[in-house]
Length: 283
Image (tube, rainbow, N blue to C red):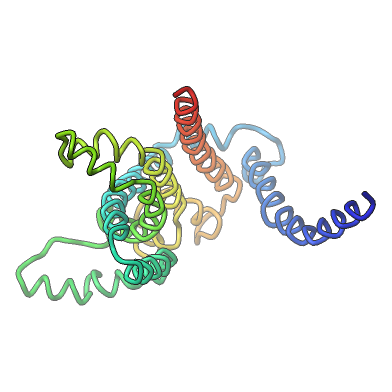
């Protein structure tokens, strides 16, 4: 018993650096943000002023609306492409599959300012593809708009969505498709009655991860739009490091609301997963 206790203490000591990192780089900053959100800038009295100001401000309400809209649309488009890619990858031979997954893994980390710079070079006002399209008589697309931002977001959503959805297709047995065919069902019947019900939890979970991935993105949006488009991450950045008036406590309140929004989405997903698990146990 003493030996086991010593081993537990020994291994527990190795966790101290990790614990310190969590405390100083996660818990303390989070506490500071939450605490600051309840104090108006320039005031030491605790109040709900920042939250009241945000909900009464049409500008910040528009910021939340735009953030949700861009994140939701990029998630939907990203999921549509990712689903097809993940399904196609699962049908490839092992060597090609590994290469494609390796590329997807690499591309899932290609975001932020490098991605914004790449799109500006390709589809910016003087981008290579923009000039080619203009010579072909195709004009009108502008990367520095809401739809341009959705395109960029969708691009970095696709590799991540593919990596998350791909393992789910391993749960599909080809014999189920054959059985469905023998019973007179077509491809539509197979996906409606077998494929999608099995993949439903994975699809919803992946969609939620992509949504939270998009709604908190700052560097990519800032690289494309600077401060010309009203979304919450850009507004938080402007309040912390802007050129005019700095309001870190108001930025903290916006960050807390953004965190609460993400937590609500995760809570809904968790309840959905629990309900599905309960139904399976009943069966």
